Image (tube, rainbow, N blue to C red; front, top):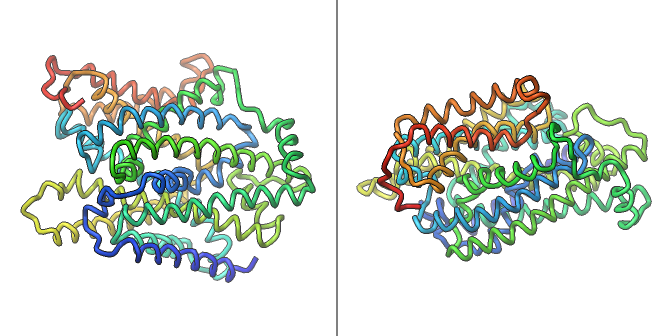
Length: 489
């Protein structure tokens, strides 16, 4: 497939995003950038959040993961359902009642200054790493299929991608992203469906026959019952629930979209609808993964060294030019939402949580806007640097890296919010940063030596739960006897 054709499709797709940006970003203000003037239609938010949640990581890594984990990831997804219900019925009512723009300001009201800054810091760290992983996956594919042919360095490819995202989010922020995510989700879902169809057609099967083939194969195994296995189904159910809570409910990027809805009821309807669509889409992705492995066996194709490369290998080299273009458009569609949302939420969190521009009443609106724009550019540069660094150290499935890192960086957030919501204690605020630092360190050593300490037990995604529990226990140890702030619960 010609690099020129791929580049033309990429530019045409990007141009579509800029048209939407032009339509949505006129007369934008800080309020529209941060919370979309609280005027976003809930059904548009729900649909667009699919693309933001899936990302290029899910699009490429989960299909390849089927080779070793079967359909066990579906147990994590079922766990997501319980997490999303918790978000809709516990966290969203809290956020709307306190009229939050940054969700981490709850921690200041509940505990104090240092707790607030700790929560915001861990979000910025988590989202910077996670967004960089996701963007790396897409930019690396563009590098291989387009820019390597023209001898353009990887750094320049990343720079182009970052500049494009920066330009179309620079003015409109969340108001623009709500609508661009809708377009991107549509293209991503179409790409998945068309890819499945092309695989089935190339194997000479119909959909019913392919479903039977997948069901009778070893790839369809969903439930693993060995308690020491990372894929043990109870571990995955619990992990899925807590991953959803922290990576959606305690994540400024995802909650910023929910908080742009008109009312709490609209935001809750958004979460319920999003949950149903998410179940279906993840099942399709796993079905695609099984189909890819069956196709390689059917055609005698040698499997790639990295499972992340399975989908692009088959789509680009063995299903024809249409499949290659469909794959690349789907990948770009999955990558843009996670990148633009991350950049906007990082800008929001730093501007409000660390610079406090929402509290500086004497500062002119134009000056606040100028500060926000400089923060936006600064985070674009940070993402650029981290993506380039990640390329040098990438040595395993990207989705595994993403969730492993999240287990360390989101754990303190889980512990902080759980302690705030489910106890009436206040804490010695100055000790919170130390507790939040020690918890991931303890988790790291427990994970590294768990086989020896726990007689063969290996931690999977449930490491996140342990991390949150250790933070919770540390806060309990340093609690105050009375609580000045329990009224915010």
